[in-house]
Length: 350
Image (cartoon, rainbow, N blue to C red; front, side, top):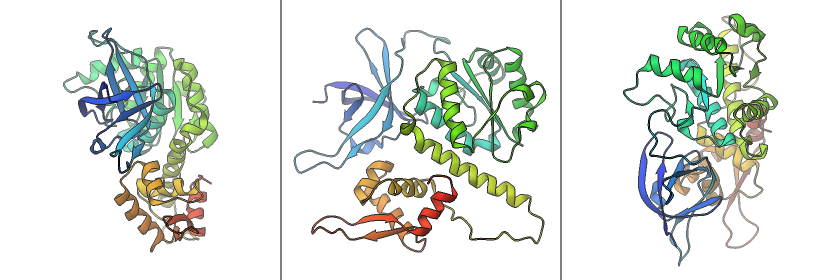
């Protein structure tokens, strides 16, 4: 029985109010399959006391339904700290400020997604000015807001790249945080050496976003700084895999730009994949018999969309093969080809 009422909050800030639901400790049931719930979205529920509970979605859990049960969501969630909506001003403490160049938005978005998921943070507890869902509120005084949040945020990450060290805004943000003598963790993008750390930050130990071990350390270190217990490592490994794949692609671009004119790289090029295609490859690599329905549920897309991408990956790309089931009436399933395994191996997933 869907006797609770919740609001679905998308990562881009859109809100779907007053939806019927059944709220459990680690799962929320909703009956509208058209909502397109995605990992990283959140549900809000107002308690009789007036406090507002927030549940962050870790697995959308779309179910096809049966002859007697209509399609619905069984979303896996984790609960964040309750807040009082009657409070105004700056009552929500900013947990993390991410200083970065807008030119690095692709890898920065993946880092923020990892941190939000692994540390149970709400989107309003993170400031990342180039990523939708974490920007400053509309109408805010940009300079005044940034100055305050740089000082007050409990945690601070400086994403260090060739672009960010040339950005006056980033340099000022890093300097202000260093001067405040508060938590500051530099994160290096691919191709950037620690000697790129500007000025007094050169004495800070930096972590790399192209290292699996150091990304795990990033989560652990931030958890300690924010006094938050992270999710188990296996729960957020898929987020790290995406960062590693993005970092490798970025590193290859840097290498190509530094290759002398006329010099050709050797070996076959790694195929360019969309985010959904890469997610599907990773999902299939972890399932012995990956059917269309299983892939759609795992990746969080419709079955029609999953079928399209599976056909693409199994067709001219030759990264998957479609196999007939050994049992009559069972659906076809997909498995990696040698070329598909090589793609994941090259990107540090296998």
